[in-house]
Image (cartoon, one colour):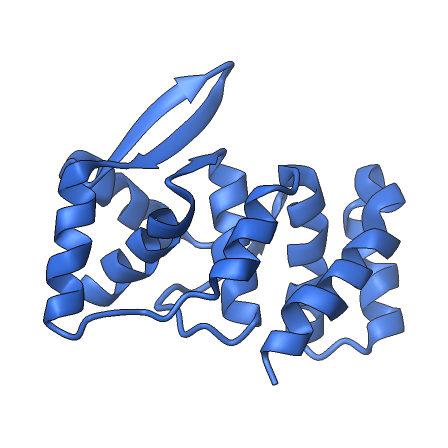
Length: 166
C-alpha cells in the first residue's frame, strides 16, 4: 500500500507535473523495465501496457490530496501537492522509499505520450520473450499508426531503458 504511494510520489518529486494518464502509465512501466522495483502489474491494452493498479493508486492519491488531478485541453494533468511532498517525506523517514532514476524520469517527461507508447510497447514485448527483431515487427503490427516512431523508440529503449536494467 505505502510502497505504491511512494513509487508514484517519487516520480512527482522529480518532475512535479505529468501531462496525461497515458504518459504516466508508460513512464512507470519503463521505469520498471529499467529495473526500478514497482508494485504494479501490467497487461497489454489498446494504448500499450496498462496497469489498473497504477490508475487506482493515482486516483487514491488525488482523492487524498497528495496529487492534484486537473484537465487541460482534455488531457489529465497530475501534479504533486504540498501535502503530497510532506507525505513522501514521512514515507522516506519510515524507510518506505523507492529509488527512482531521476535522469530517466526527466528524459521521459520530455517525450510525447505517443513516443513513450511505442517504447513501452517494445519493452513489453521484449519482456514477454520476443527477440528484438520479432519485437520490432510485432510493435509495428500493434502500433501501425506509430510505425514511423519505431526505430527511434528502439534506440531510446536500448540507450535509456535496457542499459539501466543490467
